[in-house]
Length: 26
Image 1 (cartoon, rainbow, N blue to C red):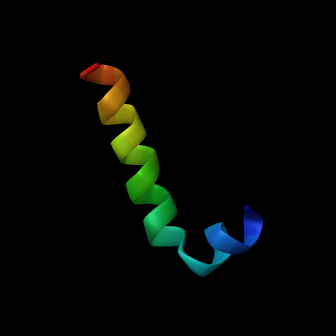
Image 2: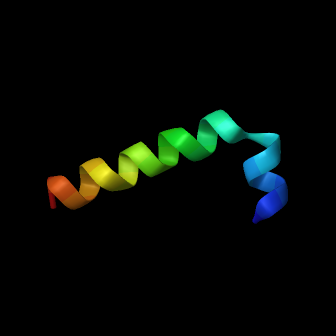
């Protein structure tokens, strides 16, 4: 979803961080 990433770059970063945290803390 390129549009979503462009529309919400901050959200994308937040989601990425959340995924990382999820992987670290299963």
